[in-house]
Length: 118
Image 1 (cartoon, rainbow, N blue to C red):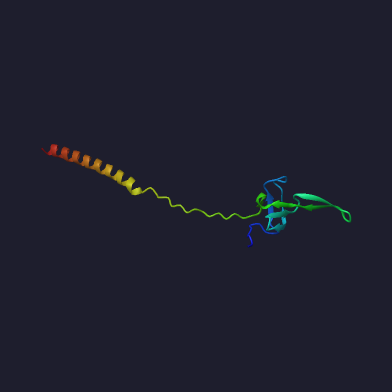
Image 2 (image 1 turned 120 degrees about the horizontal axis):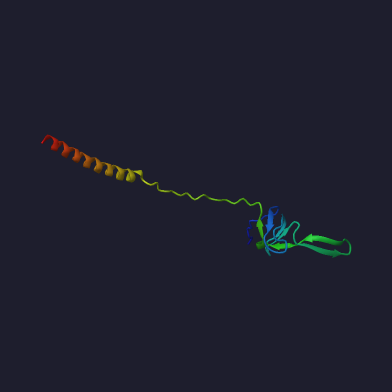
């Protein structure tokens, strides 16, 4: 049963834990059984061989200590619907106050006109 990883060979990754924290490099090799990743320029091990002498090789880093450096994050925008304040309520309050004011002034005008004629 193969495990599908988000990080693949050739990706640029950033080390987030361990001795080389903060360093970036490309993935050289992946070990799926032990979930280890070999990062270029990170966890360098020295190896002595009688024929070749001292050689330096990259060691493996745990998969959980690495994150994609150039990963494009998919962000989904949340659709929000804001209810607009209904202008009808505001205008009805104004118009009703104007209507009552005009009715009161009309009554006063009627009363004054009636008093003048009498």
